[in-house]
Length: 236
Image (cartoon, rainbow, N blue to C red; front, side, top):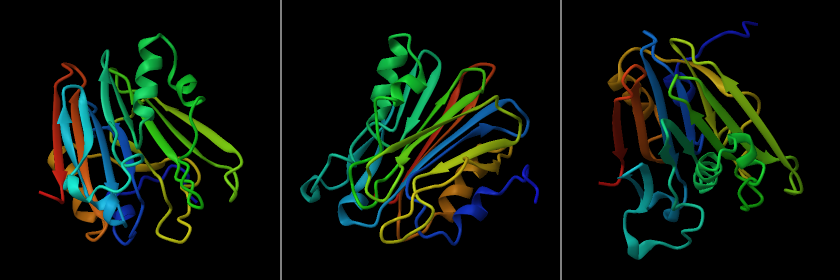
């Protein structure tokens, strides 16, 4: 067993009908850029009725057809926000919690100690989060249920220095199911190339066609801080 094996993102996504929502953070093969991605998928009409929209400090989810919105509580939020050279990426409104704690001089981990997995039993969808620093190092976190009853929250945080050609992939579910099985273990090690276009297309083209909704990618020049953002929405 090679514990240092690095998988291809496309290979992990293709054939998996429902990894749910996913975050990828890493560094380009040439070491010059940070690579970030966030995607959402959905099985219900309510979940599929969404798009990503750019905001002044990141992106937000928005209903594609406002007349079809049922419950906005867990599907409308700001997945990405920038603050003082850092980029926050999450699958829920914990983005704002992290931003507020950082603005007050407190930490990523402290912010997430105040939050739990989503209250959507029996799935108990994990809250996944990442924080990218200006130097290319990053942290990732998953908050998930410790049992089938949702009676305890497990909080797991990982810190990475940022290595050329390597990224980490964290997603909410293992695959489809009933209930949907939560992600297990450490974030998956994935290869990051030197092309932002190929990075974006590798993810988008390998997400399940029926369930994919939106994708955000950001390729950030570590020397200048210049960002190259791409947003793809199935609903146009």
